[in-house]
Image 1 (cartoon, rainbow, N blue to C red):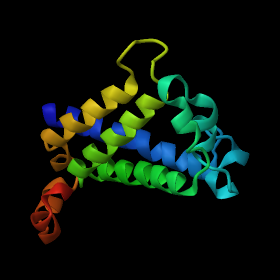
Image 2 (image 1 turned 90 degrees about the horizontal axis):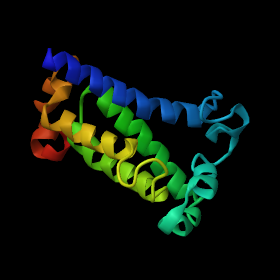
Image 3 (image 1 turned 120 degrees about the vertical axis):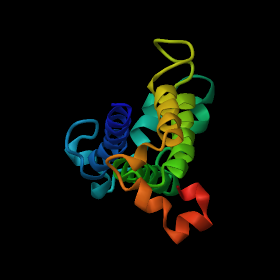
Image 4 (image 1 turned 90 degrees about the vertical axis):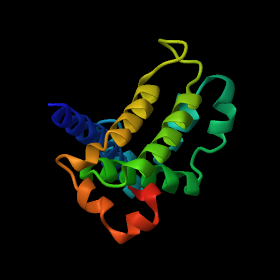
Length: 159
């Protein structure tokens, strides 16, 4: 039962990251309007960084709005973290990079509107580590096969 719940949590969290990538890339009208897609030449980070940031770090994040390397890093992060979670491979590096992304998103809106410290970004970071430390990719995923590869044995951070 534990393995099924961990797998469901891993795949669900993976879908959150992957869907954010796909919606920002194509603009399906959910979080990203059709005309504001990355494929249309619109920055996937500019709207949030210009208008969604607040608090102590807002000026720093607003200065990053529309910067091409930030857009590429953000989109690559969403895609790769989402794929890693969906496939059950590379969970360790997904946890490191996902935690960094969640920390940055948390800082961008700090102080928080509904709770002084905890929001979904913190919960997602904890969940990434919970999944990684419990080898959630080994169940209904490719984690066992992935961990046996020479690449992962040479570079254990890729497990």
